[in-house]
Image (cartoon, rainbow, N blue to C red; front, side, top):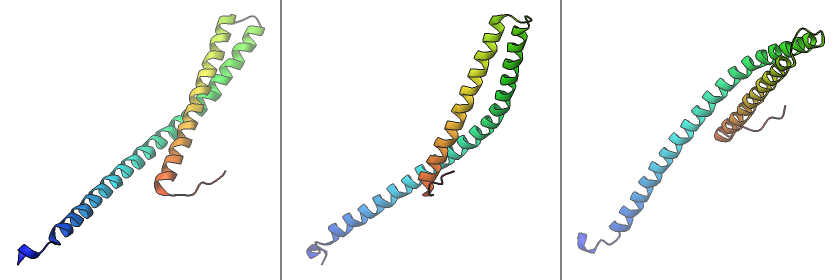
Length: 120
């Protein structure tokens, strides 16, 4: 008789807890997969930007060097030399920002995938 079966409620509650735990696990897996995909996308973009910034840094350094030489020869105003130095500093700062983004996203990927940290 179902009237004397008192264990059914506890079993149903335990099954509900198991189902809730499975749903939370699935949600956590989806969240981790989304974070991993985002970190991979950001890292790929940062690598491309860093490669471009590397070339831009060399070009800005060359322009800065040439402007200093032109200033010493009396062919360029000091304001132009200062602008070239400012541009060079800005390019280097952006390059370092992109390198930092690469390192941070690599750490996120390692944390999410359980990969060990490799020292260069």
